[in-house]
Amino acid sequence: MKVEIFDYAQEVAERVADLLEDQLRVYPYSQLGLATGTTMVPIYKEMVRRVQENRLNLAGVRTFNLDEYVGLDESNPNSFMAFMREHLFEPVGLPREHSYFPWPDFSRCPARYDDLIKECGGIDWQLLGIGHNGHIGFNEPQTPWDSKTHEVILTADTRRANRQAFGGEWLKVPQKAVTMGIGTIMHSRTIVLVALGKGKSAILAQALRGPMTLQVPASVLQRHPHTFVLCDRAAGTLLDR
Ligand code: F6R
Image (tube, rainbow, N blue to C red; front, side, top):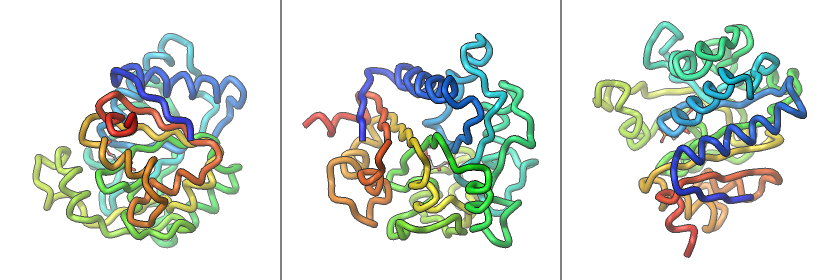
């Protein structure tokens, strides 16, 4: 893994956009795996800025989001689809038919999402955040490393962490989601994991410097051949030691 620590979140966002520019310069028709969450807001803002400045061209990409809450369709403002529309798809004019989500399209057989990804040629470039418990996508601790896209019951911790969009009431956060599995994520050719803020420092150090363990799902990335970890100084404080 290549770990890069920057002073500010904006510098992290610029580096992520640089990496995407590099990817698309060589493979303009890449399949991108995308994440949602607060970490991604400055990242997508920077991507949008570069598209508007004609530095980044997303016209040829297809996107596959990591996860979606069960029961929240695209008309629901708290769905991840609505998040993506607001922060990336609409500002860059990405056509609806170029983006895929594991729910509701694959609600009957979530593993078919893996088949679709494979049929499209696999994920070339996967963006990830990290949860306070080490989750990637919504793969909570103890998820098998060879898992495919599947339905999950979210832990109370994860629902609390995501409560902001639900008026601060964690009980309103859906109990279930569908997520790419750890196996799905590990098949990506390039992975870019981003962590921002002091709250992520302990789990980032465990994932990167601790043992590979099911207890910390992100620790599996130690085994991935082409992963970048980009963080700000606050998230990276425990990595320097
Ligand atoms: C979201 C996702 C999650 C988040 C993680 C961090 O699509 O897959 O793994 O990346 O929960 O969320 P934030 O960025 O809100 O701290």
